[in-house]
Image (cartoon, rainbow, N blue to C red; front, top):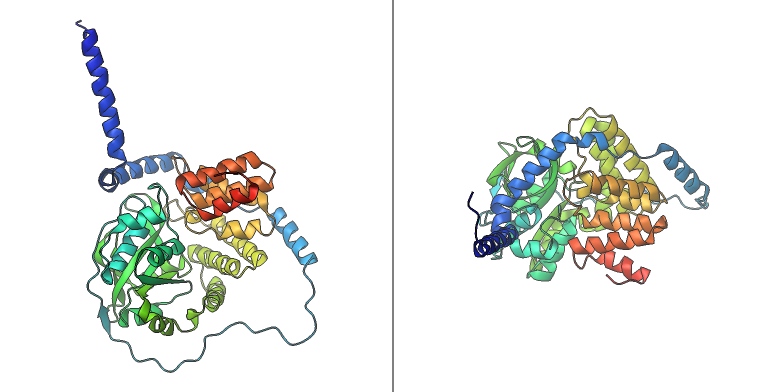
Length: 429
């Protein structure tokens, strides 16, 4: 067998090293992530879930701990003083009969683009902004909202912050929307961006969160039309299916608009123009749906009830609602494709509710379930790392807390909650 000379071996080693560096550089490019990276990522995740089904590791609250906390809270809740009756629940303000809506609407001018890896939020916001003439694409949105390409999710408030900070437009985020509101917005020339669930059964990926920009509706066919960054442009979605999948995210929507048209947007929103009123109405809607629905839909109704109470700072009520949601989820006969076990990737309400009712161990356990058991790759969810850090601090593991908070900043530099927590603890990022 003939061996390479010493010089030949050096050149071979140099060539191998150069090739490794070239491949490493390629994997960091946007082209790789958009064309190849997400396919490899999907394959690895599918293989991992096949070996370790997510349904075997669902979070379930400790009923004994929950009962103890509720009893303690009740014992320290002051009796309501005598006097006038409490303010009744909010109800929609009476309005004049609206002008009849057109039978169909389509808003032209929104550019379509497919999303990059974990980029449905930035891609859909870019398409929404393009309707108003913005010339950018998803890349600057992603750089602002998720500096780490592996970040699983962009929150609605982060998308709205990009609009306010980086463009000449404004954005408003609300929960508790309905189909008629979407039609009113479209008929008035506004393209609403909705956050909803998405069942990706054809690839075995299961349930995810997703965004979609709506551009029109057709009453005769009972459907909306929208750009779906995962599927394609001008995709139809029936009223019934949108309503079902939109429930998964508390009927959250974002409206982008020129600043000079703000009064018009607020008028279209009606009572929901006031954020607190919108949350109160959404809480009542969730309560109504709990008794009307069953199965997975009822799980989301309970979860929405918890989220809305959390937003109203009723943490005890929110924790009780989340307990019901998780108990129901554990009892449902759902396969891994239907189970919304990824929900804490997108909605962090349970962390707030359990933390502020003193259920610190459950905050830690919920974060562990979300971070360590949901993906074969290192955890890249800055919100869950932040809450695990707070839980560790409260449980006396200060070093672990600092490590989690710093890791969250590795994945999302300038993540304000983690920066504030580290500053409070007197340590540097």
